[in-house]
Image (tube, helix red, strand yellow):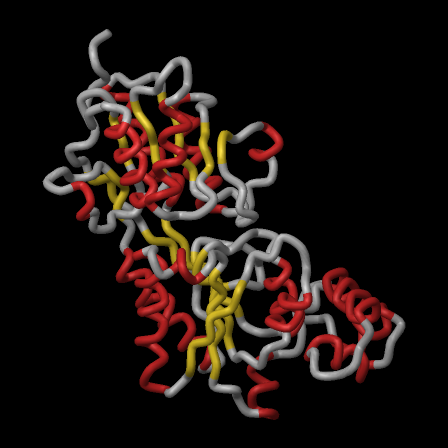
Length: 352
């Protein structure tokens, strides 16, 4: 049954509860047992019912004046990531004229927890999954079930969610083809977190099967579409120090790679540090490339070969999408192009 035909009464009948109980289950504002709420949300999914219309509800109850921004990583790491900072700044700038507040929310709980439940019940008008939007984040289901409008940046991808994403696959594929054209065949990847569970290290088949983030998955798939299966070292967070650890792992292999593809510029800087600690020169002995296009003052005069994404535009557009949803209009999804920027950290592999 299509979403436009489903009603709260139909959901209540399917779940075997009264319409008032079903309403409380969606709103999170009343004493509803967990089992009952789960039954109501399951019935809603079966019927294609996304919850009470947020525009109509806002007219009845008024707005809270709060927009939630879900940040998957610890705030310490998020605020060290220039991409995350630009996104949050763009949203805050767009909301400033209306006096709407921005509330940072923890996300990406590996399993539902009381903290997740509490965050999902907060009185927010719109929610933005600003960083590390995992495909199966339980917080997303809670907001969708309540009918709270959601904007996702680079994922998660769901029909109920307004999506802003960049061409992760296309950018990573172009970067991989550049490395291949230089003559590299022994290539490895320093990956962003596959899940935010604190794990890092070399990635095996079991870990590959549980990749939770669309951007990480697309970048790895693009690289391996060019080179075939490659060794992957996962960083548990997107910071330079974790890039160093991943770099040391990859460079300690019996057959050392001649090129390392880092899934972010911060990780790439860490890989370069690890290489230099081992006495390797970049790019003469090792090519290192990144993704994002941020400033990399750690590298001095060297310019990182990377894929540039429109960070500032991404932040502004996210803010505009939130503003549209606050006005009761659902904006169209946005797909942004990226651009390969060839710097001085990529060159042909050394002659044996």
